Length: 491
Image (cartoon, rainbow, N blue to C red):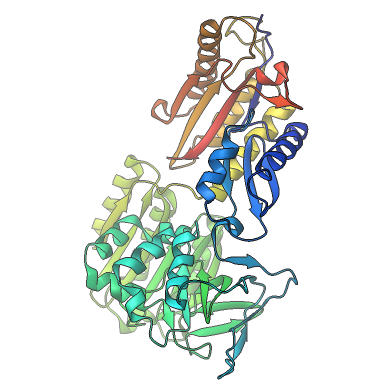
């Protein structure tokens, strides 16, 4: 008989530490039978990560051997199992260029950067091949690895000492349309990649202040990897593609929390106006790079009026998830991802009235950290407000579904997401009936979320019956197996 209590979670019940401990113990015991280099396993719910003392020869086969264990939903290999490098253990924030016996190389201090280094084992590859292997193996550098391959970076490394590698999240901010345009032209791809290599740690493009290292005054170094006799510096921003280093007259970037100002002709008048608008919207102003002039920008450049800039900024704040307003000698333009089509149309009308070009796109998908934060918030809500069904049915116990309205409100204004509701039962009863009951319960939760304000197109549901039980110490916990999962992901 299927009982009425349904436990909810985001993806898996992350708060069930006993399940995680059991999975970690059984997985580690299993994997060490055929791979002694594995030195640790960590589970978040039923999703696991395997850690290694040094890279294994066949990580894919290792994962296949583990994923068949009862109770395991998914498992991945940490970079320590897949990449020819391992993390340092001294906590040092100093990134030092590896030296050779012939020529000592200089070093540079890079703020509070997490550093990783290559293993000291002899590697059966050249330094050039090793660098490309690291780019291709690192899950945060898939876009940079693709661009490097297209640009033929391996054949043009020459005296390159540092490869500046924006993480995938930085390319997401860079914009899918612009990246696609660059990748359709090999010359543009080469120009972009060439902006991301340095021949020396003494390059004038590098600046370190207050324990933060930046490139070209705005791209922050977030991690340093020693790769043979070179280094890979992970960046939080993509550097300018044209390689000219020329700033626009004015550039204002809109994020959820800031208005970031850059440009060669930023006057005190403009900066004061931007600061006022930022404060009205609860945002901070960040002066990224370029100097601020005492002169009035509008006296020197007759491209757009200050009043028009203010109108555009307010319209952008009301209409966009993220965006950039650019003023150049040739005119003004704005680009960004809109919150919805109605607000996009309103912003386009304002831009047209002041003579600015517009390039808008649907909302960009959220990053993994943002998705994780949403899922965590959902778990917190449901732990404090459990939801239950009448035994053997998909009808909520009176009042227990109120928390679903809160979850809907949490998600309703978040752009670029999808929500999947998955229903489960324990192993009791007839399998076909369990699938139907779990489907009905998932549908009831999905309907409640839609009634709470989520777009119908964003929500889907499915029932898996008793196919994915929760196992503790080798035995199914039937109460915990009876659950419905709410999974938020980037659309």
